[in-house]
Amino acid sequence: MRILVLGAGGIGGYFGARLQEAGADVTFLVRTPRAAQLRKGGLAVFSSFGDVTVTPKVLTREELREPFDLIVLSCKAYDLESAMDAIAPAIGERSVILPLLNGIRHMELLDQRFGATHVLGGVAQISVTLGAEGEIRHLNPMHRFTAGARGGVSSPWLAELAQVAASARFDFVLSDAIEQAMWNKFVFLTTLAGATCLFRGSVGDIVASAAGEPFVTALFEECASVAAASGFPTPEAQAALFHKQLTERGSALIASMLRDVERGGPTEADHILGDMHNRAKAKGVAAPSLALAYSHLQVYAARRAAAS
Image (tube, rainbow, N blue to C red):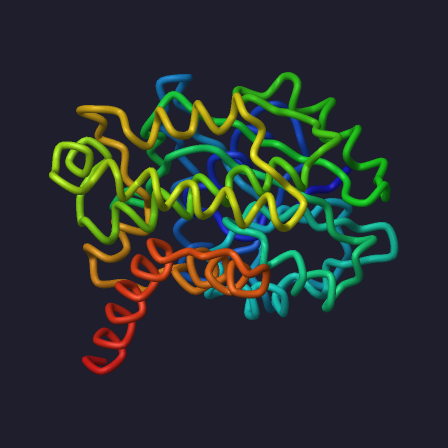
């Protein structure tokens, strides 16, 4: 099986390097400056689960001319259109795309562009960042990669991925309910991003404030109500775990979206909070906390655009 990983940033770089370390045939599709950096110094991962530096096979968009079996799509949602253009030459008759984006809206866009039979479901649960020298730094004990087929349409490449991932240094889950797993993360991440961006602080900072914990609880319940109305209710045990993580005293947990705001960069607000907000309206779910959190990020985006 030939694997193409779009991007060698935090998520794509981490899981791609781990798969290559385990013996998989991995190629990274990256922009020209990143390609030069990787060809010169390799791809380094620093993690409490073990450091590794691999010598990656690298292609740029101009060099990609043939199909791959499995395309792992790891990009920010605001880069999705250009990412789909970039991977198009890699899509053959038996190729499948395994997206690891946040949220779920990208699934509709990928289905429209490439056909649902070519699109698997995926969830990445990891906190990573790209260092100054292009190295990947793993920030927490979580490094789970979940994949599965949707709607009963499977692919032989999933079994091969599971086989190679079994010896990789990350947690791999082959799910028979991947859409539920994606919705679970969507609920959690929307709450975490909405709250930490609105309050500009960690979970611990928020729950220590006068109105923080009630706001987080209300936001989480609104997002879970949207999921339930959409046919994917958050399982009770999972909801309890999420709520505990989102209201833990002293927790340093923040969303990567807050880091994007703090550095003045673009965010995935429309793809995450905006999409959840639109689904709430479509399903008739009252979501005032969600509307407030999304409005805050809309104002941020408008001021950022005006300043550019």
